[in-house]
Length: 468
Ligand SMILES: [Zn+2]
Image (cartoon, rainbow, N blue to C red; front, side, top):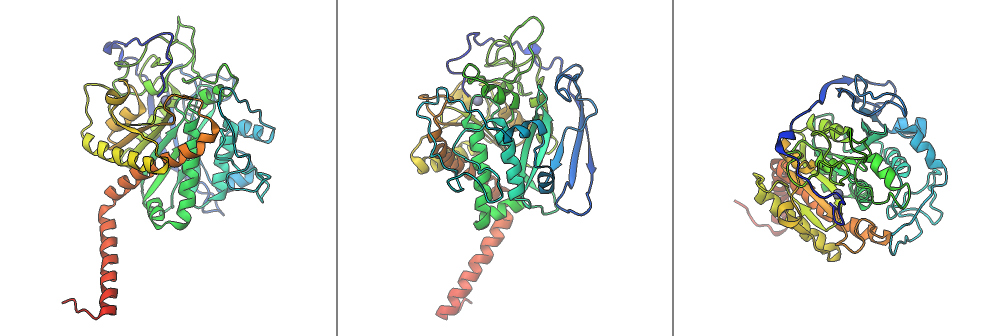
């Protein structure tokens, strides 16, 4: 969320005539199957797609001309790649990880950490020499990239890293695909974090979420079943350029938008990616002033980050059972739509699931989350990823607005990362479990029936009761 304290350049609604114009994205796709001998885990499917967007952004290397045309932008990596290279998808970024990282603490309030790694020893070193990842601190982009590779290395049978896009400044957009490789087409769950740069608790939550589902998988039959039936696609940082910029110094800490160049005649960088999706774009709660923090871009999907998410999810839309996009702050669970005149066809279901998720959240630390449409509990806005995903046909779409309620706003102290993540995890898990059980109801019912029969038979055996 988070236009509070908002724009010096207020909200200027763009006329509907602008929507749909200059819609120049032209993507084609093909799938290539490639297999590398000697390692069955390695690179099984590589999705390659090309985009042609005229003179739009996304250079192939820093300083080179814009080029989305004809270049593969989606790559799949597995454990062997990480071991081989010791580096990430973005070599330059990950190379920085080995250097001491500058940490600045501006406006972090009662910022503190327990000083220990989340799971490791006091030294923060793992047995393999890698640095233990501290889930309860905020991490700059190179550390998050390094952590993604750590997940691939630690869970080679479950986790693959997929590069699926490039930002305006040519940084790689990556996700972790998590699930059991069953060899068949699976259902899926989408989660993205940090579409807004300054909402640092969001990427912290994505990291925590990944760790929790992977740890839970080890012992919990339900999670094992869900990972067999579904893949989790988790993008820890969607707005990579903006996130990197928010770490630059104290004056950039509250940057929200991406880092795209301004349109002709305007001097301010950046587009609000959560106003740039092709969902009643440019109509309500958005600005056409490029200096506004809610500037929606010069056309729907004008931004590379928006385009790549749209392509990745859109090309698998039948697979996705739910779409979760993580923001801060406000402690809200938003359901579609942000447009005041629209009501989701499954509004009642969304509200019921959302209320139950809020109750699951409340049980963890007593924190209250409000549930409703943006119109009902926040403010109207169009062009959001959530509305786009629901219009696409993904039934269970939710926007999480994590802690807090306005005390620290986007600079949630680090000592709140753990409780904020724990409670949000409970809510997210409720929604995901609901989505899974609804889709796999028949299988679940059959399993339950079999289990009941066994209990009855066992009971019969011990008590001697005749059943017929
Ligand atoms: Zn946000």
